[in-house]
Length: 65
Image (tube, rainbow, N blue to C red; front, side):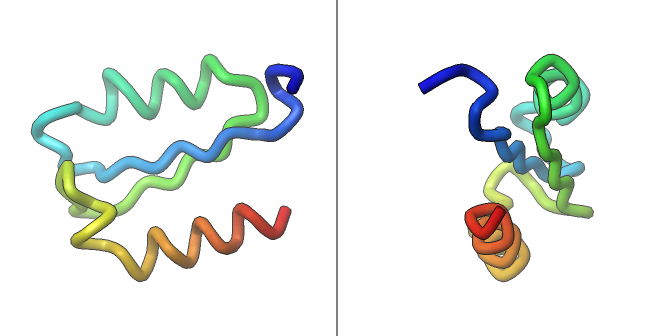
């Protein structure tokens, strides 16, 4: 598969105290061509658990591209 053939989905909580958003998701989504960034307000590092309905909706939406 060619890099960039499928746009990546970057998910991150804006309240992640373990991996700060500025040092990870914001940077990587700018460096990777056509990346789609979803930021979850008030989501901690375990955002896939605490914001699972939002994450699942975004994953379903992304897979339907």
